[in-house]
Length: 499
Ligand code: NAI
Ligand code: MG
Image: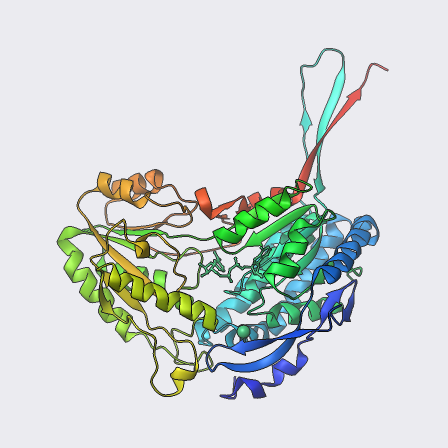
């Protein structure tokens, strides 16, 4: 693929509607206001996006309700399966373009692995959920109630969903929220993150090629404090599915209390990655390194607390620092780039703030450590892969989610100690363990209080496996069969067979 160096000239941008998708139509926002979308590699404005607010949320929720109670309800499971399969084909055909929108909108590197990988994964995700559409069922239950009762359960769609996504993967994030909605027969109002709306809007446009009744999928771009709050507090919304920070997750739970809508949350983390002295360091160094640095560290399950057993601590620190220094940081449109920019000026300030905090706390930077300000990179929001050695459990950089390419490396002595220390966090999303000893691997996998654990690997995902957190990392599962229940109500039906 040939791409221009200047994203503002990119032809794909013209194909993205910059309005709101409500009831099957692209409409202006009620406020008439717009806000800029910035390419974080250059700081350039690349588009103006419609600024939806509570009025637009009201109309979108009403449209989603009409669709739910109207034509969409007549779709059989097989019809919904076919919608998802057709969407998968459309997405597969356009995946390169969609991925490119993430490249210029949020800074994911364009490299072959990212682009082609995304094409396959996005279509796979939709086909996986297409399969479930025809396999949703209740059960007959042999009850012991006095009398003579036949009883069974039904699984019914929850209704209108408010789906709120973050900016760190808008293309896959949109489909991750849309797939279970369509599989279960719900309808949705999607609120993309204000930092990266282009791929969600382009996906919205592709929906017009499906035989989807208007209002099944609505997309309202806008800010969290206005459009997001309106959606989560809306009495006409039956469920909120949210991915983002734990702080906003708490706000959403409070807002949802008004009508006690159902809530599923995929939140932040400070995931431990534990490296034993017997680990294969040739695998562990790049594995744990990319476990932190991939997507410039802007991944919910990044393994940012790297615990290394004392005998190999110094060697690991020096090797992972060398690895960090070897990664190519650059414009996300450059095919050689391995680490792109941080999404926005605000996030850049947050990440560089933590670099200062780490140094003040006495941690020792052994790679990276400061924003890149040389040449062209000065215009974008670039932070090089950073390693802090000599980190202590109580330091802020060992406890707070930085959401940048920053690894905190901590020494440990034995398995019981590290199992305890790995759990010294409010979060519980991912966890990794690197060892050649299968017993140790299982002990850590069981003792660690997280939703996901990887052994001699880090960060693998598949539609068939739950993406799930405990503690302040979330409620309920994304992906996998378990995510369906987040979109379904269970109904108990009793039939008196004696009358
Ligand atoms: P955020 O959680 O505030 O934003 C995520 C989404 O929620 C966006 O669509 C936003 O518009 C919306 N939102 C914000 N406030 C809302 C509210 N009160 N009600 C309803 N919707 C609301 O995250 P933000 O501010 O972009 O990033 C701050 C930090 O959050 C990051 O540094 C990172 O630590 C964490 N984060 C974690 C993510 C994850 O995948 N776990 C993703 C994004 C951010
Ligand atoms: Mg942007």
